[in-house]
Length: 217
Ligand code: HEC
Image 1: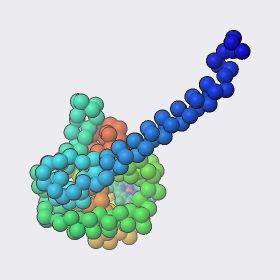
Image 2 (image 1 turned 60 degrees about the horizontal axis):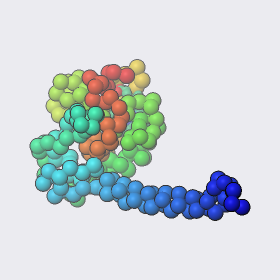
Image 3 (image 1 turned 180 degrees about the vertical axis):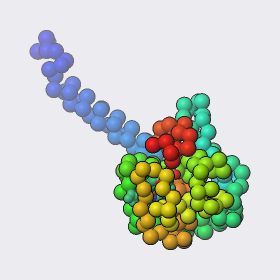
Image 4 (image 1 turned 90 degrees about the horizontal axis):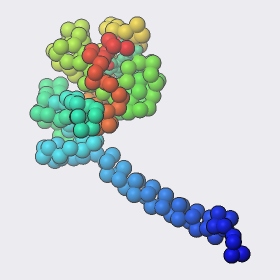
């Protein structure tokens, strides 16, 4: 008995199992609470006070969003800037912005964008990743989409494209006309703008480096 090795002692293994299980349970509970804090949506007051939240309030559509390299984190992060007009307004209330986002979310589900695109890591890669589509330079003043659609703003160009993608083919692969109405398109663009403001730890990778990402595939 005196010479019995600790490795063949049942009590040693039982205790180890208890400690490992206990430690893992505490760790998982802690991680759950940490994640809840990270993914819960901010408020309009946060935006007004410049408080950075990973998931900003729907009223982020009232602001300009840019994608900037963070040398500290080693990838791009969305930066919420000054007020910016969205379909002519920069004063959407939380309720109005929330309703637009909701409409866009329902539209994205009804028309099944994920069949072809990826949103926040879910979906397909037949068509470009939509997580940061709002930040695609192709839609900006230097891009080709505003001239192509005959619109003067990013949001109008995108809404026009969504209603008639077959008229503005930019890829070898074409997005089909999904019968999206003007209202649905507005909601979808709000949904995409909000999504682009979510801090996704630089996912999808290398998005910011793809100049004119819409043409880069
Ligand atoms: C049947 C496949 C398919 C479905 C479904 C689809 N798309 Fe597309 N989409 C494409 C393809 C292919 C392209 C690239 C072609 C192009 O840009 O002309 C594209 C391009 C886009 C772009 C431009 C991408 C960029 O980088 O700026 C946006 C925005 C977009 N789709 C939004 C949507 C939304 C929103 C939905 C759902 C309501 C949707 N798509 C559903 C195939 C699809």
